[in-house]
Image (cartoon, rainbow over all chains, first blue to last red; front, side, top):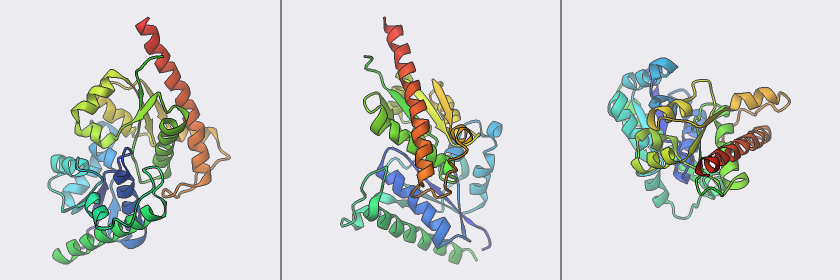
Length: 140
Length: 140
């Protein structure tokens, strides 16, 4: 498969899960799988009146490429948006599930993840990278 | 003093540092400069249409902070809530402060980015006070 995998992080500002989703997405795209992944802008993807504002390409990309959503809380904003506008995401990562697996790592705050939070973001990014690899393996 | 709050909604963009300036600005406003007068809400949750959130935004003043000319926060708010009481573009504060070139790093943000966010936060707080004054005048 030559295509890139799209990454949509919930990016919500209100909760630490949103900050973790954002940090993990950046780590994945910048360090772990820079050649295979691309970040899609969540607010642009969801924006109303996309035709007027030039964001339709985000939705079209997701229609034509496998996309992974990263959810910072149980609201599943990214997954619901992808379901609504571009079809089912190829995979969904739930931040809380990974936080629960690592109770020893406590992010400092939504504004500043701190050392533990950044370690957690690295672990989340590794999990997403595994999903990316699975998608590439399954669609040669 | 009015018991109404002003909601600060940054665009959530993670592709470029201009979104980060907006996010940092929002945190400085709601955590430090106008702690008791403002609140933060997740843009993806607003677009998803979470009822209690939309209701709160309709009943209070709302400020959009955007990181690029596509103005996702402004456009999403107009679509979901039907109004925006004031809007800011982070690129304007960058243009007004040429000596503070924002670093490209998003996580963590650099010193100049933080300085720019502080400068923008001061402007946002002045607007918060204006909007709350309008509320008081309407109640008189």
